[in-house]
Length: 391
Image 1: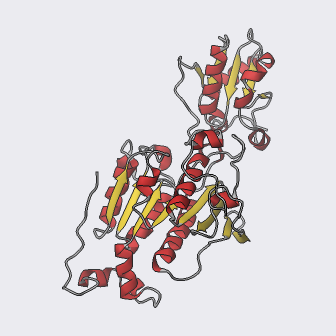
Image 2 (image 1 turned 30 degrees about the vertical axis):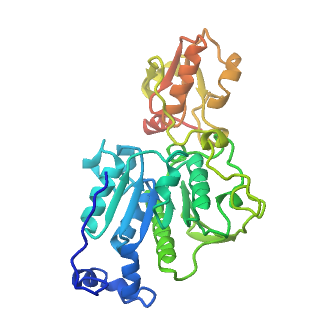
C-alpha cells in the first residue's frame, strides 16, 4: 500500500511554498542548504531497511528535514520490548505492523513527506526491485545476512549505502559510495554463528540508537545535497560508556568479489546460507511439543534440595560475564554433540539469558529422549531480578 501526501500548493515557478519556507526556515539559512537544497531534499527518495532502533531516529530526522519520499522495509510487528529504543512506535501501536506505525508517526510529523511502507522482509527476490527506486539506502537491519544482502544489492545497482550497527554501549557507522568500496571490503566474511550477540542477547541502550541513527540521517543528507565529507572509507567507532570516538580508515579491496576489479558475484545469492545464520535475531522459536517451564523461585528450591542438573546454553563470553552458581556450560550449538554430559535420569534445569535459547535446547533434549528437562522462565535475567545469587 502506498500513501501519497500532497505538498502545500505553491505559486508557479516557486521552488517552495510559503508554508515550506517557514517550516524549513532554520535549515534553509545554512549556506550549504539554501532554497535549492531544500527543494532537492523534497525531491529525494531514501529507503530505510528496518523500522527499529536505528531506523526510527533516522526516519524521524529525515522526515522532519523534508526528505520527500521515505520507503520503510520491515516485516515485524511492534512488541513491548521495542519501545525503549524504537521511538517511531508507542504503546498504542503494540501488535501493529511496524511500517504502519512508522507511516502514521511520520505523517503526523510532516505532511510534506510521502511514506512508502514495505511490510515484508528484504530478500534476494525483492531487494533489487525495492532498492532500485531510491537515491540513498539506510541500513537499519540487525543481522548479518541482511547486511550482506543490502550491500550487494546497492553495489549491483550503484546506490550509496549508509551503514551503522550498535551493541551494548558501542556504535559503528560508515558510508559506502559506489566506486569507493563496500561492506565486503571492510568485512570480507561474516563472523561465526554465535560470535556476535544480538540485541536480545547482549542488550542495547536506546539513547545510543538515537545517536547512531542521527549520524545516519546526517550522512544521508550530505549525500543528497552533495555537501561536506561523508564517512566514505572511514569507520566511525563510538564508545558511549567512555564517551570516546575514534575513526579507522579503510580502503576499497580490488579483489572484492562484489565491487572489485574482477567481481565474481554478479547476482544476489542465498545470504542465510552464506552467513550460516537466519536473517533475524529472534532467539525463541516455536517448539514442536510444549516446553516445560520452571520459575526462578521453583528452580532455586529444586537446586537447594539437590539432585538437579543446571545447564547454561549461552556462549562462553556470556558465561564469563555472569552465571548461576553450579551450572555446566554447554552452548546451544553444542547441545546435540554433548548429550553424554547431561544425565537422562536426573532432572535438569536449562537456562540462557532470557529463555529463548534454553527453550530450543529443551526441545532438542526432548527429541533425544530426555523427559526431565525444564526451561528456566526468563533466564538469568529473571533469576537476577529475583535477587538470587550469580557469579
